[in-house]
Amino acid sequence: MKNPTRPFDDRRRQCLRLAAGGTAALLVPFARSAGAQMPAMPKSAVAINIVDVAGNLALTQDAIEAYQKAHPQWVSKFVFGKMPAPELPGKLKAMQAAGRSDIDMVLTGTDFLAAGIEQGELVKLMPGYASKFPDLMANYQPPAAKMQELAGDYGIEVTFMPAGPLLEYNPDKVKDVPTTPQELLAWCKAHPNRFIYARPANSGPGRTFLMGLPYLLGDKDPKDPAHGWDKTWAYLKELGAYVEYYPTGTGAVMKELGEGSRDMTPTVTGWDLNPRALGIVPKSFKVAPFQHMTWVNDAHYMVIPKGVAPEKVAVVLDLMAYLLTPHAQAYTYDQGYFYPGPAVKGVTLAMAPAKSQESIREYGRPEYEKWLGEFPHTQSLPSKAQVEAFRIWDQQVGAQKTK
Image 1 (cartoon, one colour):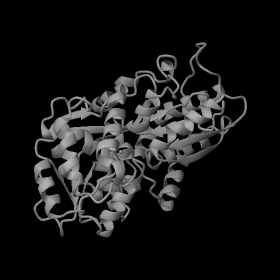
Image 2 (cartoon, one colour; image 1 turned 180 degrees about the vertical axis):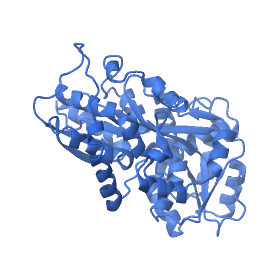
Image 3 (cartoon, helix red, strand yellow; image 1 turned 60 degrees about the vertical axis):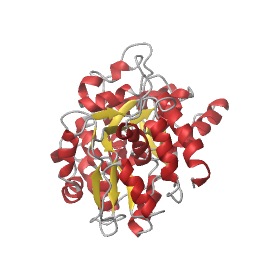
């Protein structure tokens, strides 16, 4: 899923807090390891600073606040912040060089996960803290388990989406809907500046489009952007002649689409459902798959930057474990933002808050189930390859047109 900063619905928050209050007794902490590697819980409550670079708080903030309500002896408060994913590595590097730790936990997509691993800024969670997450891989849905593999030993997957790439369009403006990259290019030539997508390094739909093209174009090696994407890079450069500019985040794309400044954009399941549920994009807008597409699945992760105090690490690990429980995972259906949302097995829509159930029933698309079964799936690029793909796109495609 790119750095969305969408507003929360206050009535939704009130409803979910009431629901959480009725189940606070369920929020028992996971058992702590007696091993020497496991830090002790704090003797008095601490403030935990969480930075979100993926829009994940839309899915997890209510559950996180419910955890604090159940465990005031450990958490005095959670302090939430947001920033674009590309800005965080530099901020962490500066803090760690100064011996400071102002961020205790990061909620991220594969973008910062990749950068944080590559730059050595994250705490290694496995196998040292494995006892905190018993049967971790077995508890994930099978495609979500494949996405957890991308985290290596440094992150814990918290939400999952079989993303895309799909095309979202205004049906009043787009009559001949493209079904192949070649048809999309022809449409853009005929309708310059009416197609838009965001910088992949900070956009879920942008990077899903980027990672899906090698499969659609028949590139030599879809997992090797540096040596196996000749067709993809040539295509994106040609397509770029008909793209006015590349926003730095998906929220700006959806705003322009909804206002009528653009007619079509690559999207993913959650970025289709949620902006329509929030009224940013008209409910009548449509989506279409590419012919013979491969789903590039997406996920959000929980990571800990280096330098966090041991007692805070202990709390964050316990919070991570709670966020993988079925009760907490049911919140992640949200209003379809990261559709469906839950990463673990056995979490049904019927378990979600009423607001989530209503939104997904109203704005969901029955054809998704058909498409999810019809086309093959793959996980996002591994961290090194993903960082390389973003670097090449920034240099060769985005260049002076990103703003």
